[in-house]
Amino acid sequence: MTHLYSDGAKAKSRSILAIARTGAEDLARITCLTFYAVNSNKQANVSARFAVLAVVIEFFQILAFALAPSVSFPWQTTYIGWLADLSKALRPDILAIGTSPSARVPIAAVVVAAALVLIVGALGVASAYFLHKISQENGGSQEPKSTSSRFGRQDADPFSDFVSNSLVLRAFRQSGLLLYTVLYIPVTRAPLAAIPRIW
Image 1 (cartoon, rainbow, N blue to C red):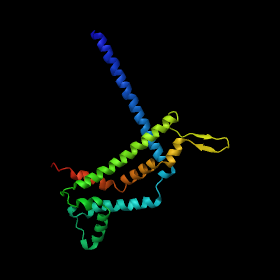
Image 2 (image 1 turned 180 degrees about the vertical axis):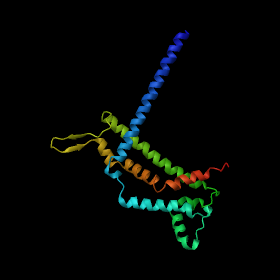
Image 3 (image 1 turned 135 degrees about the horizontal axis):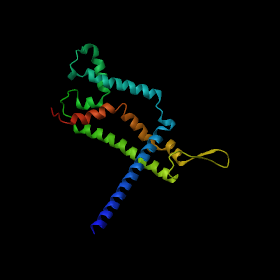
Image 4 (image 1 turned 180 degrees about the horizontal axis):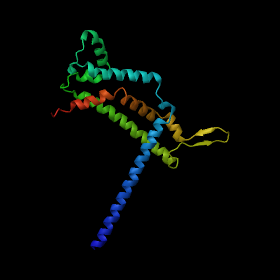
């Protein structure tokens, strides 16, 4: 009797491992498919105007650390007051929290930061779901297929059509681009400043 129970437990554990393995493979395939769709389109290219604007904004956001009064650098406020005001204006976390490292963080700042991250995550999950569904309809292929019609022109497959025309994928691409460039410092500082200091 014990022998039958151990064989059943082994078979059950093997089936659970097989399910976990196929689930991990499907997750890796869907993740790669989503990144392929996000980066394979012409819309994934960043315009030169946005790139320059993002670099300038990030420069002033980083400069705000050096210009903060809590750092106590010997800056003369007569000369750099305008620069400090400009760098504060480009950092919404400084407007909400302030420059003091011991300032209390308003709960609204943490909620807004969490909401932004959740929105981008939800857009990513929705994009992955739609891409997985289209991939299954195409027979599991991750590569876009093009078929020639009777009239000699190329007809786009549903995958390429979704990649080039999807509002969800475009919103995920643009919000992700903003989140890891211009909004990175403000979004990460608010929740980290909310954690009480242990030392």
